[in-house]
Amino acid sequence: MVREERRQFGGIPMEILWKTNMKNFHVRAYPPDGRIRVTLPASITDWELESFLATQREAIEKLQEKAMTQEQEAKPSFTTGDICYLWGKPYRLEVIETIGAPRVFRMGDTLRMYVPKGTSSARKEALYEKVCQLELKKVYPAVARACEERTGLHPTEYRLKNMKTRWGTCNVKARRVWLNTQLAKKPPQCLEYVLIHELTHLVEKNHNARFYALVEQYCPVWREAERLLNGKVAKPRP
Ligand SMILES: [Zn+2]
Image 1: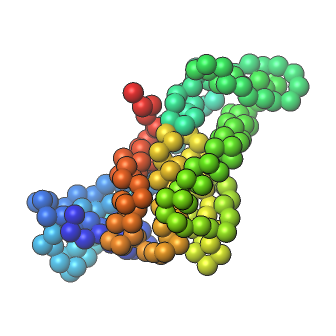
Image 2: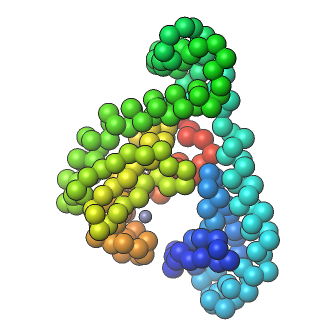
Image 3: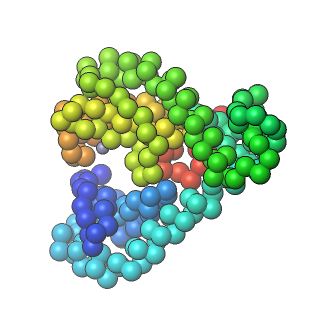
């Protein structure tokens, strides 16, 4: 890679990558948020890029919309037989209608959900998200400690939140790191990468070459983790 930049075009945030081995422009949109990545030959000037984007605007918007709806289609409907992920491992959902308060148990490869009859799929999804929140709450402190030790960077606090478009954020001023509770669905190296990524923002605010050099140093598997985070579903490790 020669150069990487983030910029807005027509209100659409994009990652632009100039690469030496490229012959043509490539545009991809990634689920779940329809993030746009444009890869192009290193020789392309800013002006050529701008005019390419101007002619492709409609096509890019369509790609983005497709990536966003794809994710929705892949979402389970929360009925028995659906697959739900925890730490990248697939669990078969078993919905059992019962009386009393809803509860969820993990039994081997099965996620058993006890719910009152007629519980909506939105409510069942909320239960699954709650399981993810509890999982992350239990697991992240030890991983965060290890990442802090490795980087020598220490935030004042961590907070967890179910977020729609971000895996994590870092409020640099307050030195506060936010983690998306949905990280509990992804393989463990994803949590590690997001922690390293957000901690690195404490010393480098922008996604520039210095930032990625530091991330690479602290977390050599970051590319793989990023790929897993942006994939449609978390694939189990062999
Ligand atoms: Zn970042």
